[in-house]
Amino acid sequence: MAREESHTHEGDDGATDQVLTAVGPRLRKIRKERGATLAGLSAATGISVSTLSRLESGGRKPSLELLLPIARAHQVPLDELVGAPPVGDPRVRAKPIVRHGRTMVPLTRQPGGLQAYKVIEPQRTAEPDPRTHEGYEWLYVLSGRLRLVLGEHDVVLTAGEAAEFDTRVPHWFGSTGEGPAEFLSLFGPQGERMHVRAKPRKRSEGED
Image 1 (cartoon, rainbow, N blue to C red):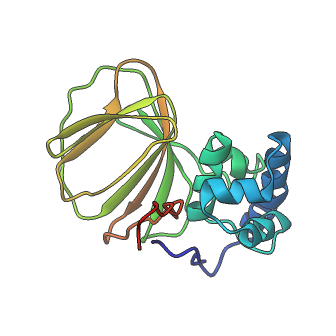
Image 2: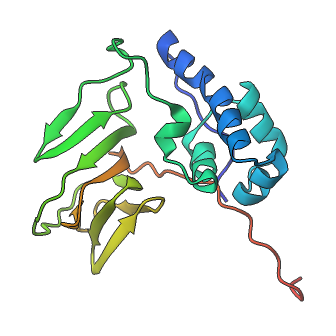
């Protein structure tokens, strides 16, 4: 099971701290709007009540492995939990990159290492062209449908579904032709893997 603790990077600027500070109150607001209790959310996510409480109070810094199961439990896009950064601060809102018709918004600013993007794939018809390269990639679909060709597999990911894979395996992802798709992409050029805390499996009767 992945560790619940997360690693932070030194050098985060004050603007990033402001964004993270706002996550706690937003988590509490969304939970109360849905009439959920901390105990109920803990049962749905596998995250302890104390950790959820510290997240909401600001005593625990939010991380992807904590926010992802919360977003799935509330059935909201992950970026709704984080919130949009203030407009006009170039240190926070990076300029979108358009590459091969796909819009990519960088979510990380440090060079090298793990990189994160919010990606918008337009509706279009494209022939899969699997490629390979060093690294490890993690995809999480926010909305729409995303086609993923990975080795011998050809699957469609829908909102709330994720995939992770070694990029040395031939892979391609893009539009299904049915509409646009919006997703998060995390890529580690040195093969860094992304871990998500899973809900503990209930022990069946008769198991030791």
